[in-house]
Image 1 (spheres, rainbow, N blue to C red):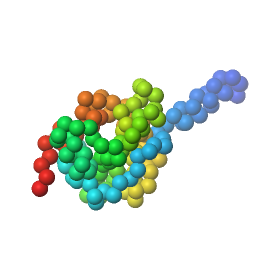
Image 2: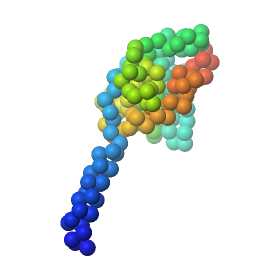
Image 3: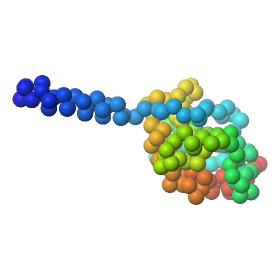
Image 4: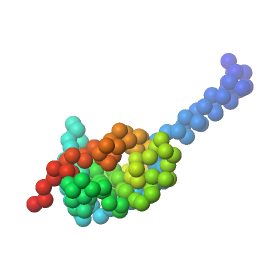
Length: 157
């Protein structure tokens, strides 16, 4: 048994382990930035068990959706994830001109890019933005947003 672990079989196991560890969750660099949350409009709230998510964006984005126009470049959509009454993390989508070209065709969500941030506003390196991008691809008919219809129905006070 020791010979097997020390020989080719062992090298294969070590190599596979290194490969799998390297594939674990890591934030990839994106162009998405942390917006000034206080300047965004809170247009809906989603509750999932103990998690409360406040979803926010710009007034201009909401108005564009309500008029049936594309969401403008430069728009941030923020999901503020609260747990135990405190901000746990931020999920940010940001749209920029030709940002989709940063990815292979099979990974594009138009010109949206994604990033997770910690409560202090720093990038959360432990989150997997590729997973978010993959999931949001199913919403291509709604500008890649799960809350597109909430945005469309939102009434300003």
